Image (cartoon, rainbow, N blue to C red):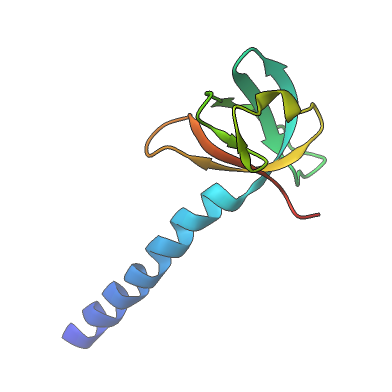
Length: 99
């Protein structure tokens, strides 16, 4: 019985870091830009499902495509990957997603 608990704990330990990484590495498509806020949708969508737009805040410290204070380079339709500040909707870095 203790072996099962140990095995379960080990599998859970392996899955937790992998699960947290995928959220930051998901690709998004920029749908709307309003001031310092981006509204993005998942880059891969099922045609029969609806998706809510995700709100991402960009600051002058956000690294956009390798440069700081580069927000003007983001265009509607860009496919991006975002690294967020811990427990926040503020972007630390925005990269172009590999197509």
